[in-house]
Amino acid sequence: MYQRARALERAGDFEGAIKLYVELLRQAQVTCKTPSRATSINWRSRCGRRLKLTYGIAIARRDQGDPGKTQAAIRAYLTTSRRLFPRAKVHHEAEMRFHLATAERRLGHHQQALDDYRAAIRSWAKRQPKARAPFKGKALQGIAAMLAKLGRHKEASSAYTALLDEHRAHHRRPHPDASYLRGVIAKLEAKAKVKAKGAVVISAGKPPKAGDDKRKLSLVSTTDSRSDDRREQTAASSKSTPVYKTWWFWAIIGGVAIAGGATAVGVAASGDSRVPHGPLVEL
Image (cartoon, rainbow, N blue to C red):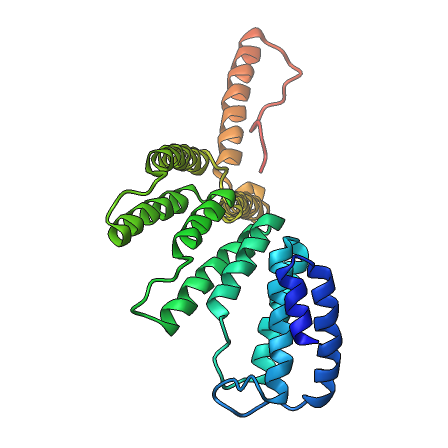
C-alpha cells in the first residue's frame, strides 16, 4: 500500500496518496506508542515507520501547493519526530523548516516565516557546517523580504546586501537580479532615513512626562503652603499681641493728641466757654 501511495504521489494524485498514507498511519499509531531511546532514527522500526508516513504526508502536502495544509502537515511531522525520537536529530529538519517558512510566507505570516527561515539556516549549519545549504540563497532572500514586510527597513537593507555578498562569494559571479536588488536596497535605505527623521521629530516634540507634571505640582503646592503658613503666622502674631502694645496704636494716639491740642488752642483763642479746662485725653 505504501508503494501504491508513492506511485499516486508521483502521478500528481496527491489527495489519493495522502488518503493511503493516513490509513497506514492509523495502523502505525496503534503499534508505536512509546518514544524510542535511540539516538538515531531506525526507519524499519514501528515508530520509524510511523514517522516515515508522517513525513510522506508533509511532502505530499508541500507538492500539492496548499500553504495552509502544508503548514499543518510539516508542523505535525516536526512535532512527531521530536516526540517519537527525542534523542535523535530530526530527519531533514532544515529542509522542512525552509518549506514551512515558504508556506507561512504565502499565508502572510511574516514573523513566523522570518523565524523559520533563520531556523532552517541554523539547522543546516549545525548539521553540515562545511557545506552550503541548497536553499540558502532563497532563505536569505526570504529573510530580507520578511523584514521589509515587517517595516524593519534598515535590517532588510542589510539582509539584501548580505544576500548579494553571499551569492558572489559562493558562485564567484554577481547575483542574476543584482541590479534590481540594489534598487530595492536604495528604496529601503531611503525609507529607513525617513523613519529615523520622524522618530527624532517625535522625540523632540513629545509632551512632558507625567512625573515632571507631578514634580511641578508638588513645587507649586509647597510654595502655596509656605505662603499660607506665613500668612497664618502673621495673623496669629497680630492676634496674640494686645492693641495698646503696638506701635501704630500709640502713633494714632499721638496724632489725635496733637490734633486735639491744636483745636483747643484755636477754641481758646476764640473764647469758646464750652471746652473745659484740663487735659484733653485721660488715660
